[in-house]
Length: 90
Image 1: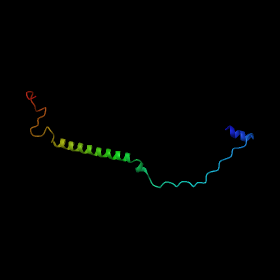
Image 2: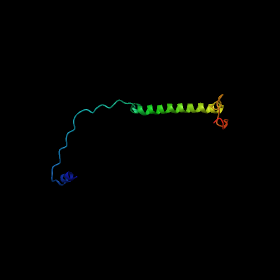
Image 3: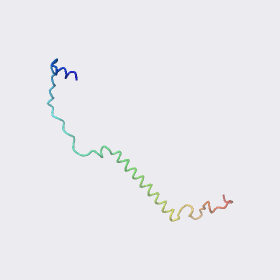
Image 4: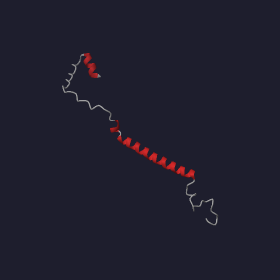
């Protein structure tokens, strides 16, 4: 700020402004979206999580269906549950 005040007061001559270089501006980058190119890791992680979720939901549904039909480890032939055992068998 002080140099500008000194120029206004007439105490010093203003500094010469440098001339701009006559170089042509650089061309713009190619148009288009780099959204997926820049974020491919996020996309890969999201797809992986969706696949894991689909696998876990499928396993859960299959187990629930087996449980509702009564085809569990306790209903198989020869399998005993804790409720059907006598104290002598334990």
